[in-house]
Each structure stands twice: as C-alpha cells, then as structure tokens.
Image (cartoon, rainbow, N blue to C red; front, side, top):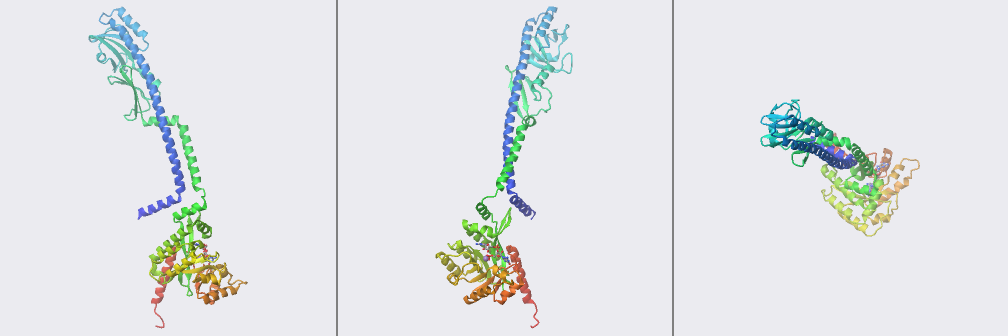
Length: 529
Ligand code: G
Ligand code: G
Ligand code: MN
C-alpha cells in the first residue's frame, strides 16, 4: 500500500515536473560530459607534467652519479698503495673538483684507510662493505650525523674499493625543488629508495610514472593519486570547470524554456489525446419526477499546465484535424467502463447522450464505437443518444443517412441539439428521423423574463408533440423555468438546477445514492397498506 502511494506520488511528481526534470537532465548531461572532458584533459596534463619533472630529476641525478663514477675512476689507481699524505691530498683534490661529491675514500679489509675527509684510518662500517657489493648503496647513517643517510658509489678491485659519497639531503632538496608538490622517488637497483615528504601520502593505487636511468642504476618514479588529480583540477582548471557549470546552467534554462514554449495547438491536441487528457464529464438529465434518468457526455480537457479547458476552445480544432474521432472513442470507452462497474444503480433505459460533430457523419467510425458500447450492456439497459447540433447543416450526401439508419437499427437515437438556434425545418427533422429535440439553453433562459417569446417554446413543444418526439430542455437554472417547462409538457430537463457536468465517479456516486433512496422508499411501510 505504502509502495503504491509512493509510486503514485513519484508518477505525479514526474508528470508535473516533466519539463523541469528533462531540462535538469539535459544540463546534467552537459555538465557530466564537460567535466569528464576537463578531467581527462587535466589528467593527461598532470601526467605530462610529472613525466617532465621525472625527466629533469633523472638528468640531474644521472649527472651526480656520473660525477661519482669519474671520481672513483680517478681514485681507483690509488688503491693498494699506502695512504701517504700525497694520496690523501689527491683524494681531496678529486673530491673538491667534483661539486656534488662529499668524500672520496679508499677501503681495504675493515678499514677506510684513506679518505678525502679524514686524516686517520677509520674502522670499516658495515654499510661500506655492502656498498661494494651493490655498487650504488644507501647507508642509513654517516660518520658525522647518525640520523642522516648517505649515498655511496663504489668500485671494487679485488678486496679493495674506491668509494665516493653523495649527500642524501642534497639529493632530497634537489628532488623537492624539481617536484614541488609532486612526490618524486629515486629507487636504486637494490630497491633502496630516496624520497621526500609531500602533502600526499604514498599510496599503492594511482597512476605510476617511472623512468629508468641510462644504465639501469636507478629509477625515478611518481605515483599520481586521485587526490592529486583533483587538487590539480581545482587549482589549474577551475576557470574551465566554472565555465562548464555556467554553460550547463544556461543550457538547462534554455532547454526548459524551449520545452515550456507553447507548441502549436494542433501538436498540443495530438499530445493530449496520447496522454488521455480529455475527460468525459457527465451532466445529469432528469425526468418529470426529478429523478436522474440519463446524462450527457461533455468533454473537458484536463491540461497539465493550463488546468481545465472548455470544449468550445478545442472541439473546432479537433474537428478540423480529425482527432474528434479518437476523442469520441476514448470518451465512450471511458464512460462505458464507469457505467459497467456500477450498472445496477442505473435505471433501465438509461439515456446516455454524446455530442457528435457533422464531420463524424461522413463515415461509420462512430457507428463502430456505438456498436462496441452497446454490446457491453444487457439489452435495454442503456439507450445511447447521438446529439447532432442544429447550428451546422448536415448535407445529405448519403453517408449521413446510412450512418443514421445503421444507428437506428442498433437502437441508438438521434437528438437535435441546440434546437431553435439553427436552420432546422420539418423536412430536416423528418429526413434524419430525429428522435429527440433539445431546446437550446438560450430559450430556457428567456423564461421568466419580461420579453419572453412564449410562442417559441409553445411552438417547439407543439411540433414535438405532433411528431411524437421527446423534448429535453437544456440550461434549466431555476424553479420558475422548471415549472413553466413542466406546464408546457416537457418531459426531460438538464441544467445547473440539477447538476453541473460531473466527473463520472461522482456521477456514479449520485446514481448509487438515488438507487438506495429509491429502495428505502419502496421498503417503507405504507399508511394505506
Ligand atoms: O460544456 P459545454 O461547454 O460543455 O459544451 C460546449 C459544447 O461543446 C457542447 O455544446 C458541444 O457542442 C461541444 N462538445 C462537448 N463535448 C463534446 C464531444 O464530446 N464531442 C463533440 N463533438 N462536441 C462536444
Ligand atoms: O452540447 P450542448 O450545447 O447541449 O452542451 C450543453 C452546454 O450547456 C454545455 O456547455 C454545458 O456546460 C452547458 N450547460 C449545462 N447546463 C447549463 C445551465 O444550466 N446553464 C448554462 N448557462 N449552461 C449550461
Ligand atoms: Mn449537447
């Protein structure tokens, strides 16, 4: 039950805000496409930038390593010989001439026995030996500062090594200067890493950009995380993104205006037929005893934006476009299902009138509608009446006569609507075998007025009586009119005095109440009995 309510609410919401939702959807699509494009563009920009930075870092670090190679190559011939002051001076000279090299040392057994920095021999440090094995090696501490790492490049000759040391602090600063916010990492071929702290935490996911060094001694890499992409976008592409949002809003508003723009009435009518926006209302017809014995179907357009639209405004166009046929079919089908649901409340021979336009007299479509309608009810339950306006003259092309003949055979009666306003003649009434006359409301309204042309009503009634035709008086609004019409032998009445045209559900409710009232009356004990 709750789900049904929710669904109903959703359907109502979507129907009411259809244009708005469509425009929003359009705007969102543009926004998604735009931002998607900007994101891809930003992504490739950032990746290019990182590659560029990695290339620079690679070149600079390669330079330093090359310098270290040159230094140890120069120091290698000094290996094996004793550490004389001349050897130490030569090591110092080599070191000083290499701006990025901190020290150049000679190692044998467990000792750095000669250094560009120390005059005395130093006990070998566990780091230095490994350095010899791995060529490029990152020591966890250096002689002067136990917290500071140092990078060694070594070259072995037998059991002896020439070693050059490079300041890791210096390398980190260089990386930071190049990378700025972008994290750059040097990974040695023994998997040791030199990196520096950035605002981005190191993640395993993200795009990896990696550049191998010339001799595969190290790799410069950077991992671009989603946060980095986002930050880059916000700081570099905010103008494009703002523009994209503005364009999406403009497109949404424009789309909304276009959708809301009134379409041609003809298009609108076609759409409304598809959407079932034409609703058949039922105006009761009462008999001499004041009981509802029938109804006239009067069409109402329930427009989603304009509200109710009266038939005078759309029937002429519906006639011109031929849509009146399908509208009549829809109306009869809808009324049929209402009447069928509660047919026990309808009096036998219930008079159901439907207006037909002259253009509907040229074919047998209306006849098919009537056939389908009549076959749904038990015989004698409903009497269908086709109301033909007297305002427009129906030429007897043969089609109309055939239609009326077939309708009559089916038991459908023909009423002459708006009687008195047009050009009917006795011949016309005879020609089409008119069964009912509906006195136009303009005459009913004259009743009670000072200049009432009473002879007109008298004449109509006279004519009807002589032709043995039923008469319905339309537009009865007050008791004076009703009394007068009753005195003049009119049998049926229709007008605001009884009811306005009602939605079918409400009309059926009234029929139910009337039927129950009738039963109560029959069941009540009689004083005479
Ligand atoms: O209420 P009212 O304004 O309902 O009706 C005005 C006129 O519109 C009616 O007199 C009738 O001629 C026309 N009309 C109303 N409903 C229909 C319909 O279903 N078919 C046709 N052809 N005309 C209709
Ligand atoms: O099809 P026809 O022209 O008969 O349709 C009847 C028209 O008269 C409809 O437009 C209907 O709304 C209108 N109508 C019905 N009862 C009254 C009434 O008592 N007074 C007035 N002014 N109009 C009425
Ligand atoms: Mn009518």
